[in-house]
Image (cartoon, rainbow, N blue to C red; front, side):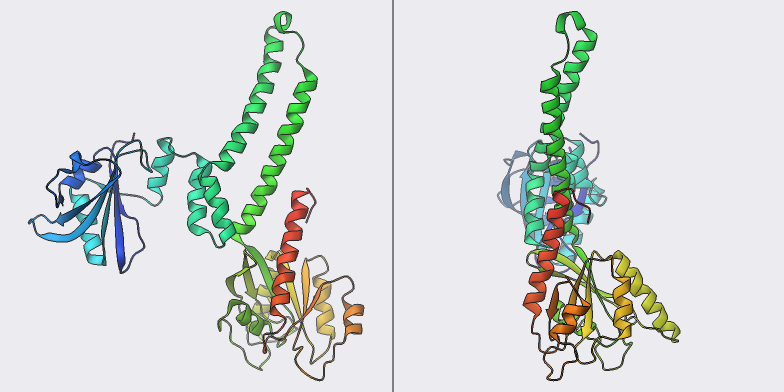
Length: 392
Protein backbone atom coordinates (compact mmCIF):
# COMPACT_ATOMS: atom_id res chain seq x y z
CA UNK A 1 0.00 0.00 0.00
CA UNK A 2 1.29 3.49 -0.83
CA UNK A 3 2.15 5.86 2.00
CA UNK A 4 0.04 8.90 1.14
CA UNK A 5 -3.58 9.72 0.39
CA UNK A 6 -4.70 11.32 -2.87
CA UNK A 7 -7.74 13.32 -3.93
CA UNK A 8 -9.19 14.53 -7.22
CA UNK A 9 -12.40 15.69 -8.85
CA UNK A 10 -13.36 12.63 -10.89
CA UNK A 11 -16.06 14.21 -13.05
CA UNK A 12 -15.61 16.63 -15.97
CA UNK A 13 -15.33 20.35 -15.12
CA UNK A 14 -18.36 22.60 -15.39
CA UNK A 15 -21.89 22.65 -14.01
CA UNK A 16 -24.03 19.53 -13.76
CA UNK A 17 -26.35 17.58 -11.51
CA UNK A 18 -23.65 15.68 -9.63
CA UNK A 19 -19.88 16.05 -9.26
CA UNK A 20 -17.62 13.47 -7.62
CA UNK A 21 -14.63 14.09 -5.38
CA UNK A 22 -12.65 10.90 -4.74
CA UNK A 23 -10.18 10.30 -1.91
CA UNK A 24 -7.99 7.18 -1.82
CA UNK A 25 -5.35 6.04 0.63
CA UNK A 26 -4.84 4.66 4.11
CA UNK A 27 -5.90 8.00 5.65
CA UNK A 28 -8.93 8.54 3.41
CA UNK A 29 -11.51 8.12 6.20
CA UNK A 30 -9.51 10.19 8.67
CA UNK A 31 -9.07 13.05 6.19
CA UNK A 32 -12.72 13.03 5.08
CA UNK A 33 -13.89 13.09 8.72
CA UNK A 34 -12.21 16.47 9.21
CA UNK A 35 -14.69 18.26 6.95
CA UNK A 36 -17.62 15.84 6.48
CA UNK A 37 -20.34 15.30 9.06
CA UNK A 38 -22.94 12.56 8.76
CA UNK A 39 -26.54 13.83 8.99
CA UNK A 40 -27.27 10.82 11.21
CA UNK A 41 -24.51 11.73 13.64
CA UNK A 42 -22.36 8.67 12.90
CA UNK A 43 -18.60 8.94 12.62
CA UNK A 44 -17.32 8.13 9.14
CA UNK A 45 -15.05 5.46 10.60
CA UNK A 46 -18.15 3.67 11.91
CA UNK A 47 -19.97 3.55 8.57
CA UNK A 48 -20.22 0.22 6.80
CA UNK A 49 -18.27 -0.36 3.61
CA UNK A 50 -20.07 0.08 0.30
CA UNK A 51 -22.81 2.30 1.68
CA UNK A 52 -24.03 5.80 0.87
CA UNK A 53 -24.66 8.24 3.69
CA UNK A 54 -26.33 11.66 3.57
CA UNK A 55 -23.77 14.10 4.96
CA UNK A 56 -22.73 17.74 5.18
CA UNK A 57 -19.49 19.31 3.97
CA UNK A 58 -18.35 22.00 6.42
CA UNK A 59 -15.54 24.53 6.05
CA UNK A 60 -12.99 25.61 8.68
CA UNK A 61 -15.56 27.98 10.23
CA UNK A 62 -18.06 25.11 10.58
CA UNK A 63 -20.23 26.65 7.87
CA UNK A 64 -22.20 24.23 5.68
CA UNK A 65 -20.77 24.23 2.15
CA UNK A 66 -22.85 21.46 0.57
CA UNK A 67 -25.17 18.56 1.32
CA UNK A 68 -23.65 15.42 -0.17
CA UNK A 69 -23.86 11.65 -0.39
CA UNK A 70 -20.70 9.99 0.89
CA UNK A 71 -19.69 6.54 -0.33
CA UNK A 72 -17.30 4.46 1.77
CA UNK A 73 -15.34 1.58 0.22
CA UNK A 74 -12.85 -0.07 2.52
CA UNK A 75 -9.66 -1.80 1.42
CA UNK A 76 -9.15 -4.12 -0.32
CA UNK A 77 -12.66 -4.09 -1.87
CA UNK A 78 -12.32 -0.82 -3.75
CA UNK A 79 -11.14 0.29 -7.19
CA UNK A 80 -7.66 1.18 -5.94
CA UNK A 81 -7.42 -1.58 -3.33
CA UNK A 82 -7.17 1.15 -0.65
CA UNK A 83 -9.72 2.86 1.56
CA UNK A 84 -11.78 5.09 -0.74
CA UNK A 85 -14.20 7.90 0.09
CA UNK A 86 -16.35 9.26 -2.73
CA UNK A 87 -18.12 12.57 -2.10
CA UNK A 88 -21.11 13.07 -4.39
CA UNK A 89 -21.50 16.86 -4.42
CA UNK A 90 -23.99 19.04 -6.21
CA UNK A 91 -22.47 19.76 -9.60
CA UNK A 92 -21.59 23.41 -9.15
CA UNK A 93 -17.97 24.30 -9.77
CA UNK A 94 -17.52 26.25 -6.54
CA UNK A 95 -18.97 23.61 -4.19
CA UNK A 96 -16.89 20.84 -5.76
CA UNK A 97 -13.72 22.91 -5.67
CA UNK A 98 -14.36 23.76 -2.02
CA UNK A 99 -14.64 20.07 -1.09
CA UNK A 100 -11.39 19.39 -2.95
CA UNK A 101 -9.59 22.24 -1.16
CA UNK A 102 -10.84 21.05 2.23
CA UNK A 103 -9.51 17.55 1.51
CA UNK A 104 -6.10 18.95 0.57
CA UNK A 105 -5.96 21.11 3.70
CA UNK A 106 -6.87 18.03 5.75
CA UNK A 107 -3.79 16.19 4.43
CA UNK A 108 -4.60 14.69 1.04
CA UNK A 109 -2.39 15.24 -2.01
CA UNK A 110 -3.78 16.21 -5.41
CA UNK A 111 -3.75 13.09 -7.58
CA UNK A 112 -1.76 13.00 -10.79
CA UNK A 113 -3.58 12.10 -14.04
CA UNK A 114 -4.38 8.38 -14.02
CA UNK A 115 -3.06 7.89 -10.49
CA UNK A 116 -6.15 6.09 -9.18
CA UNK A 117 -5.76 3.48 -11.92
CA UNK A 118 -2.01 3.32 -11.28
CA UNK A 119 -2.68 2.56 -7.63
CA UNK A 120 -5.17 -0.13 -8.62
CA UNK A 121 -2.37 -1.71 -10.68
CA UNK A 122 0.30 -1.36 -7.97
CA UNK A 123 -2.04 -2.80 -5.36
CA UNK A 124 -2.82 -5.82 -7.55
CA UNK A 125 -6.47 -4.96 -8.19
CA UNK A 126 -5.95 -4.96 -11.96
CA UNK A 127 -3.13 -5.99 -14.30
CA UNK A 128 -1.56 -3.87 -17.03
CA UNK A 129 -4.00 -5.05 -19.70
CA UNK A 130 -6.94 -4.09 -17.50
CA UNK A 131 -5.34 -0.72 -16.74
CA UNK A 132 -5.09 -0.02 -20.46
CA UNK A 133 -8.69 -1.18 -20.87
CA UNK A 134 -9.82 1.57 -18.50
CA UNK A 135 -8.40 4.22 -20.85
CA UNK A 136 -9.82 2.43 -23.90
CA UNK A 137 -13.25 2.31 -22.25
CA UNK A 138 -13.16 6.05 -21.63
CA UNK A 139 -12.01 6.83 -25.17
CA UNK A 140 -14.27 4.34 -26.98
CA UNK A 141 -15.72 5.82 -30.18
CA UNK A 142 -18.08 2.97 -31.04
CA UNK A 143 -20.28 0.44 -29.26
CA UNK A 144 -17.98 -2.39 -30.40
CA UNK A 145 -14.95 -0.62 -28.90
CA UNK A 146 -16.93 -0.16 -25.69
CA UNK A 147 -17.79 -3.88 -25.51
CA UNK A 148 -14.22 -5.00 -26.26
CA UNK A 149 -12.78 -2.62 -23.65
CA UNK A 150 -15.27 -3.82 -21.05
CA UNK A 151 -14.33 -7.44 -21.78
CA UNK A 152 -10.63 -6.64 -21.34
CA UNK A 153 -11.40 -4.77 -18.12
CA UNK A 154 -13.06 -7.95 -16.83
CA UNK A 155 -9.88 -9.88 -17.64
CA UNK A 156 -10.80 -11.66 -20.90
CA UNK A 157 -7.50 -10.82 -22.63
CA UNK A 158 -5.44 -11.37 -19.48
CA UNK A 159 -6.97 -14.84 -19.08
CA UNK A 160 -6.02 -15.78 -22.66
CA UNK A 161 -2.46 -14.52 -22.25
CA UNK A 162 -2.02 -16.36 -18.95
CA UNK A 163 -3.29 -19.57 -20.56
CA UNK A 164 -0.59 -19.37 -23.25
CA UNK A 165 2.00 -18.44 -20.64
CA UNK A 166 1.07 -21.50 -18.61
CA UNK A 167 1.53 -23.79 -21.62
CA UNK A 168 4.97 -22.33 -22.39
CA UNK A 169 6.08 -22.59 -18.76
CA UNK A 170 5.05 -26.26 -18.74
CA UNK A 171 7.01 -26.92 -21.97
CA UNK A 172 10.05 -25.14 -20.54
CA UNK A 173 9.89 -27.07 -17.26
CA UNK A 174 9.72 -30.43 -19.08
CA UNK A 175 12.78 -29.62 -21.18
CA UNK A 176 14.72 -28.30 -18.16
CA UNK A 177 13.82 -31.39 -16.13
CA UNK A 178 15.20 -33.69 -18.84
CA UNK A 179 18.43 -31.65 -18.94
CA UNK A 180 18.90 -31.48 -15.16
CA UNK A 181 17.78 -35.04 -14.40
CA UNK A 182 18.37 -37.07 -17.58
CA UNK A 183 18.54 -40.45 -15.84
CA UNK A 184 15.37 -40.00 -13.77
CA UNK A 185 13.26 -38.13 -16.35
CA UNK A 186 14.66 -39.33 -19.67
CA UNK A 187 14.09 -37.57 -22.98
CA UNK A 188 11.44 -34.86 -23.19
CA UNK A 189 8.09 -35.90 -24.74
CA UNK A 190 8.86 -34.12 -28.01
CA UNK A 191 5.58 -34.97 -29.70
CA UNK A 192 3.54 -33.52 -26.83
CA UNK A 193 5.82 -30.48 -26.70
CA UNK A 194 5.39 -29.86 -30.42
CA UNK A 195 1.61 -30.05 -30.10
CA UNK A 196 1.70 -27.62 -27.17
CA UNK A 197 3.86 -25.16 -29.11
CA UNK A 198 1.65 -25.35 -32.19
CA UNK A 199 -1.40 -24.68 -30.02
CA UNK A 200 0.33 -21.76 -28.28
CA UNK A 201 1.37 -20.31 -31.64
CA UNK A 202 -2.21 -20.46 -32.93
CA UNK A 203 -3.50 -18.81 -29.78
CA UNK A 204 -0.92 -16.01 -30.02
CA UNK A 205 -1.73 -15.43 -33.70
CA UNK A 206 -5.41 -15.15 -32.79
CA UNK A 207 -4.56 -12.66 -30.04
CA UNK A 208 -2.48 -10.55 -32.45
CA UNK A 209 -5.27 -10.56 -35.04
CA UNK A 210 -7.79 -9.67 -32.35
CA UNK A 211 -5.52 -6.85 -31.24
CA UNK A 212 -5.50 -5.40 -34.75
CA UNK A 213 -9.29 -5.58 -34.90
CA UNK A 214 -9.50 -3.93 -31.47
CA UNK A 215 -7.14 -1.19 -32.69
CA UNK A 216 -9.51 -0.44 -35.56
CA UNK A 217 -12.54 -0.24 -33.28
CA UNK A 218 -10.58 1.84 -30.76
CA UNK A 219 -8.61 4.27 -32.93
CA UNK A 220 -10.69 4.20 -36.10
CA UNK A 221 -9.71 3.86 -39.75
CA UNK A 222 -8.12 6.81 -41.55
CA UNK A 223 -9.98 7.62 -44.76
CA UNK A 224 -9.04 10.49 -47.10
CA UNK A 225 -11.33 12.04 -49.72
CA UNK A 226 -9.09 12.81 -52.70
CA UNK A 227 -9.63 14.33 -56.14
CA UNK A 228 -9.07 17.36 -58.31
CA UNK A 229 -10.52 20.73 -57.18
CA UNK A 230 -14.25 21.37 -57.11
CA UNK A 231 -15.49 17.79 -57.53
CA UNK A 232 -17.49 17.91 -54.27
CA UNK A 233 -15.06 16.56 -51.67
CA UNK A 234 -16.03 19.12 -49.02
CA UNK A 235 -19.73 18.60 -49.74
CA UNK A 236 -19.30 14.85 -49.23
CA UNK A 237 -17.49 15.42 -45.93
CA UNK A 238 -20.32 17.63 -44.72
CA UNK A 239 -22.90 14.99 -45.66
CA UNK A 240 -20.96 12.20 -43.94
CA UNK A 241 -20.36 14.12 -40.69
CA UNK A 242 -23.89 15.60 -40.87
CA UNK A 243 -22.78 19.19 -40.29
CA UNK A 244 -21.24 22.06 -42.25
CA UNK A 245 -17.68 21.21 -41.31
CA UNK A 246 -16.02 22.37 -44.54
CA UNK A 247 -16.59 25.52 -46.60
CA UNK A 248 -18.30 24.77 -49.91
CA UNK A 249 -18.10 27.22 -52.85
CA UNK A 250 -18.02 27.08 -56.63
CA UNK A 251 -14.47 28.48 -56.56
CA UNK A 252 -11.86 25.75 -57.22
CA UNK A 253 -9.12 25.47 -54.60
CA UNK A 254 -11.22 26.68 -51.64
CA UNK A 255 -9.96 23.91 -49.34
CA UNK A 256 -6.38 24.69 -48.37
CA UNK A 257 -5.92 22.56 -45.27
CA UNK A 258 -6.91 19.09 -44.08
CA UNK A 259 -10.35 19.13 -42.46
CA UNK A 260 -11.24 16.02 -40.51
CA UNK A 261 -13.79 14.54 -38.16
CA UNK A 262 -14.82 11.17 -36.74
CA UNK A 263 -17.89 9.37 -38.02
CA UNK A 264 -19.37 6.00 -37.14
CA UNK A 265 -20.02 3.71 -40.10
CA UNK A 266 -21.75 0.41 -39.33
CA UNK A 267 -20.24 0.43 -35.84
CA UNK A 268 -16.71 1.24 -37.06
CA UNK A 269 -15.15 4.59 -36.10
CA UNK A 270 -13.75 6.34 -39.17
CA UNK A 271 -11.47 9.36 -39.19
CA UNK A 272 -12.58 11.04 -42.41
CA UNK A 273 -10.32 13.67 -43.99
CA UNK A 274 -11.30 16.28 -46.59
CA UNK A 275 -8.23 17.30 -48.60
CA UNK A 276 -7.23 20.11 -50.93
CA UNK A 277 -7.83 19.42 -54.61
CA UNK A 278 -4.76 18.11 -56.43
CA UNK A 279 -3.66 20.17 -59.42
CA UNK A 280 -0.64 22.07 -60.73
CA UNK A 281 -0.81 25.60 -59.31
CA UNK A 282 1.33 28.70 -59.00
CA UNK A 283 -0.47 29.75 -55.82
CA UNK A 284 2.00 29.25 -52.94
CA UNK A 285 -0.69 28.64 -50.32
CA UNK A 286 -2.63 26.23 -52.52
CA UNK A 287 0.64 24.37 -53.24
CA UNK A 288 1.11 23.82 -49.52
CA UNK A 289 -2.44 22.43 -49.38
CA UNK A 290 -1.64 20.00 -52.21
CA UNK A 291 1.48 18.84 -50.34
CA UNK A 292 -0.64 18.21 -47.25
CA UNK A 293 -3.08 16.24 -49.39
CA UNK A 294 -0.30 13.94 -50.57
CA UNK A 295 0.84 13.49 -46.98
CA UNK A 296 -2.73 12.56 -46.00
CA UNK A 297 -2.87 10.09 -48.90
CA UNK A 298 0.20 8.35 -47.49
CA UNK A 299 -1.27 8.32 -44.00
CA UNK A 300 -4.75 7.11 -44.97
CA UNK A 301 -5.61 3.41 -44.93
CA UNK A 302 -8.41 3.87 -47.47
CA UNK A 303 -8.77 6.51 -50.21
CA UNK A 304 -12.10 7.77 -51.50
CA UNK A 305 -11.19 9.00 -54.99
CA UNK A 306 -13.85 11.41 -56.19
CA UNK A 307 -14.59 12.29 -59.81
CA UNK A 308 -17.14 14.75 -61.22
CA UNK A 309 -19.83 13.37 -63.54
CA UNK A 310 -20.44 16.87 -64.95
CA UNK A 311 -16.88 17.38 -66.22
CA UNK A 312 -15.96 13.82 -67.15
CA UNK A 313 -12.65 12.09 -66.53
CA UNK A 314 -9.78 14.45 -67.27
CA UNK A 315 -6.01 14.26 -67.46
CA UNK A 316 -5.93 15.57 -63.88
CA UNK A 317 -8.05 12.61 -62.75
CA UNK A 318 -5.75 10.17 -64.54
CA UNK A 319 -2.65 11.69 -62.93
CA UNK A 320 -4.18 11.37 -59.48
CA UNK A 321 -5.20 7.77 -60.16
CA UNK A 322 -1.60 6.92 -61.08
CA UNK A 323 -0.54 8.12 -57.62
CA UNK A 324 -3.21 5.87 -56.08
CA UNK A 325 -2.33 2.65 -57.91
CA UNK A 326 -1.04 0.95 -54.77
CA UNK A 327 -3.70 2.38 -52.45
CA UNK A 328 -6.84 0.75 -51.10
CA UNK A 329 -9.43 2.92 -52.76
CA UNK A 330 -13.11 3.32 -53.44
CA UNK A 331 -14.16 5.29 -56.52
CA UNK A 332 -16.85 7.93 -55.98
CA UNK A 333 -18.63 9.49 -58.98
CA UNK A 334 -20.29 12.66 -57.67
CA UNK A 335 -23.14 14.74 -59.14
CA UNK A 336 -25.10 11.69 -60.22
CA UNK A 337 -28.27 13.80 -60.01
CA UNK A 338 -27.51 15.91 -63.12
CA UNK A 339 -29.13 15.15 -66.47
CA UNK A 340 -26.11 15.54 -68.75
CA UNK A 341 -23.40 13.31 -67.36
CA UNK A 342 -20.00 13.09 -69.05
CA UNK A 343 -19.13 9.83 -67.28
CA UNK A 344 -21.19 6.83 -68.36
CA UNK A 345 -21.05 3.17 -67.38
CA UNK A 346 -18.67 2.36 -70.26
CA UNK A 347 -16.23 5.03 -69.03
CA UNK A 348 -16.40 3.53 -65.57
CA UNK A 349 -15.68 0.01 -66.86
CA UNK A 350 -12.72 1.22 -68.96
CA UNK A 351 -11.19 3.59 -66.41
CA UNK A 352 -11.71 1.67 -63.17
CA UNK A 353 -11.46 -2.03 -64.06
CA UNK A 354 -11.93 -4.19 -61.00
CA UNK A 355 -12.59 -1.21 -58.70
CA UNK A 356 -15.70 -0.68 -56.61
CA UNK A 357 -17.50 2.39 -57.97
CA UNK A 358 -20.25 4.24 -56.09
CA UNK A 359 -22.40 6.93 -57.69
CA UNK A 360 -23.52 9.67 -55.31
CA UNK A 361 -24.96 13.13 -55.22
CA UNK A 362 -23.50 15.05 -52.31
CA UNK A 363 -25.99 17.85 -52.99
CA UNK A 364 -29.06 15.59 -52.94
CA UNK A 365 -27.48 13.20 -50.40
CA UNK A 366 -28.19 10.14 -52.55
CA UNK A 367 -25.96 7.08 -52.68
CA UNK A 368 -24.58 7.80 -49.20
CA UNK A 369 -25.96 4.61 -47.62
CA UNK A 370 -24.38 2.56 -50.40
CA UNK A 371 -21.09 4.41 -49.89
CA UNK A 372 -21.09 3.74 -46.15
CA UNK A 373 -21.93 0.06 -46.71
CA UNK A 374 -19.11 -0.29 -49.26
CA UNK A 375 -16.64 1.44 -46.95
CA UNK A 376 -17.59 -0.82 -44.03
CA UNK A 377 -17.21 -3.85 -46.32
CA UNK A 378 -13.69 -2.80 -47.34
CA UNK A 379 -12.68 -2.36 -43.71
CA UNK A 380 -14.09 -5.76 -42.73
CA UNK A 381 -12.36 -7.42 -45.70
CA UNK A 382 -9.02 -5.91 -44.69
CA UNK A 383 -9.47 -7.06 -41.11
CA UNK A 384 -10.29 -10.56 -42.33
CA UNK A 385 -7.12 -10.56 -44.44
CA UNK A 386 -5.06 -9.54 -41.42
CA UNK A 387 -6.60 -12.31 -39.37
CA UNK A 388 -5.60 -14.78 -42.09
CA UNK A 389 -2.06 -13.41 -41.89
CA UNK A 390 -2.16 -11.75 -45.32
CA UNK A 391 -0.44 -8.45 -45.97
CA UNK A 392 -2.67 -5.48 -46.61
